[in-house]
Length: 303
Ligand code: ZN
Image (cartoon, rainbow, N blue to C red; front, side, top):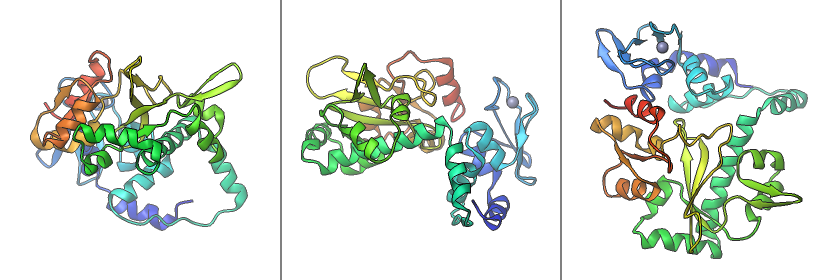
């Protein structure tokens, strides 16, 4: 449980304009800031951010609240996750109060599917990256990226990795770590046919896809040898829909806002290569047509 003192500090120090400003492009309007509402569809901005009162309010749809509420509404974070996110943002330590084992267990049980999937995705990203950098067999993946001129800091920034050719290397590893098979399947990391389970991604270099809070929601994998499909995306899951996500937007958001424009490219390799060449404001659709949601997401960052 997060201590009352921590919650109090967060409430005092988290700035609404910084929290909202990370996701919505805001323009100064008098003492307030104005932007396009992220909660309803609009062409004329009616989403108001009031730094003095530390709140936001939309005059179109009525959504309103403070920094914590914004994260709960917009990022669908739980209350404790919103607190942790803000603590990190304002750079304060989260004090946890001791709770009974029983209470802890209950909290774990409350973890819903979405959270379990996100934890599994994060574990998969670490597995793919570690495998590429530390395992002999992972060198094929590293060599592929190096051949394309990717530098270490680029590989690190985009958290690139390699999914081994073993039939179920990741699944075995994850089960050993205590993940439930059901969660791995729902996360699209493990596929199953009849009685056997296998890794969904095999022998592919891996590009994790982040949402706007930096959580891994899915992956794209490029096959190493000849084979189809050349690029494979995670299946649709409760946290991942191809038509909603733009690859690289999390990494590019700052640069898009600073330069005032975004570059939309065809795929993963383009995004990573351009960022390394000094154009970090680039994103890509995930092998789908550009959807209205894609455009809306970009319009929140730049006009
Ligand atoms: Zn609204």
